[in-house]
Length: 394
Image 1: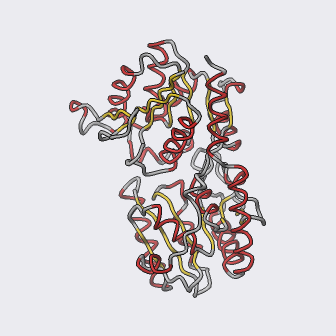
Image 2: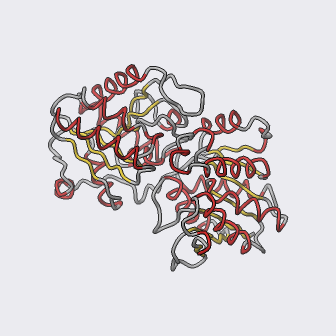
Image 3: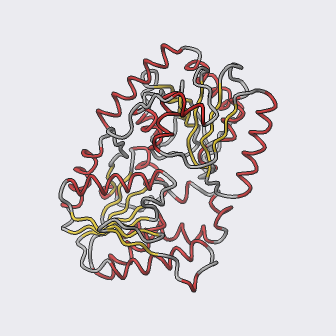
């Protein structure tokens, strides 16, 4: 059986959780002797079994959604001969859908996020957001199977696309490479990044996008004890507007307190493991998060996680055991905006203060988080489940 896996992100061009998922899934599938051909956006890669595709010259400078379609059509042409085509994110969905129609093969979609629940993407794509939404909806409707990365995501899919047949929506969690993601105690490396390892710290890692909830975290951080550092490993802004909002929030916070460290470049895995290992607690203030691989990375490094009780986060964080869940009442218009932002900020601050103020509790939660990652989120288990889905379609 040959599976053609289509993705926008693939090493070395990885900027988010979907790219991490794809890279690890491919390795695990190949270890189980599944023949996987990767078709990825971007510059040529040297890895065997991987072909890269660039935006056609004629579409250079076009709306990003339109240029994405240009890449997808090139990929669809090359899928001929595959038994299964498996696409990840809307960027790749059109390629999978067209290839499925063209060659009569099953199309499997893995949903890492949903366009109807990211309306702020209109700020980034303009009219292209309507195009990306159409692509996703069409691909989901035509797919043989839709894989959700959490039960919360499955509920969101069925809510967003109520005409979808429930029986074809499966849950396969994101995973974590536990051999690579493990504690890395390196105080000198942490110091070189501007972090004081002797002080308690709250660490955030993620893209600068509406769904990650950074503005709420910056407000909550103003309420933390004065000795607590806030470490923001945040970059890749969706728009100039959200970047400016975060810059203003960081500047305002720095006027109130010291120990606000903003690292705006992509850290190496070694650096990130050191930062997470040093963290008193990790924070995930997202208002939309299908699962959050970064939460698993933090847990694997022994950091407790304080996360919003939304999406798939409650399936990762065991409240009171591996961290704390922050309650949130959200608008149901697709934005996920807190109905009472002040209360959400206060509850987020209270949960963070509870963990950072009790180092023994934080350490105990971190150890429990590592154990939970080992027990439930290994890539071998995820590859086995994915192969079972493939086998059911051929």
